[in-house]
Each structure stands twice: as C-alpha cells, then as structure tokens.
Length: 89
Image (cartoon, rainbow, N blue to C red):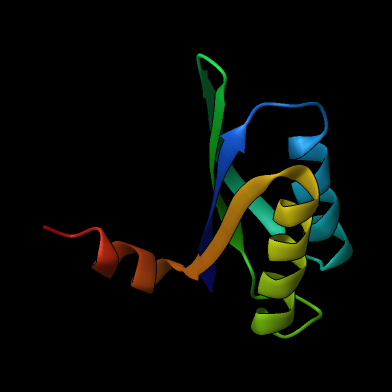
C-alpha cells in the first residue's frame, strides 16, 4: 500500500531529516521524493510504501502533523488512491 506525503511551508534546516526520521522509525519506505524551494517556500512530495508500517496510519499522520507544527510547516499524508481521486480533473 502506498501513500503520498506533501510538505509546504517556509524553508528551514531539518525539514527532510524531520520527516524521514519519522518514516524510518515507523518502518515506512520512501519510494520517490521531490522537493523544490520557490523563493523562500519549501515544497516536497514524497511517495512512500506503508505496507510495512509498524504503527496505525492515523498515528503516523498525527506524528507527521506534530512535526509540521514543530517546524512551522503543513505536512499531510494521504493514501495514494485518495490523493489521486482528489487531484483528478
């Protein structure tokens, strides 16, 4: 099962480390990652495999959300099918 993580906010040191540490601790594998900085705005989209995740999805989501608050970012995780449905025209 795959999920999409989006990160948006003001650029600062430690964003990728903060997110990837939570994923590693939860046994979530990063399949693809892209990030860019538009002037001073950090954006990142990460495709992850959550089939081996060792915590419930809602707990993972809460941990990412908490890290987002800590770093001053908006971090959201969605199951891949929900993400695709929401962005289909």
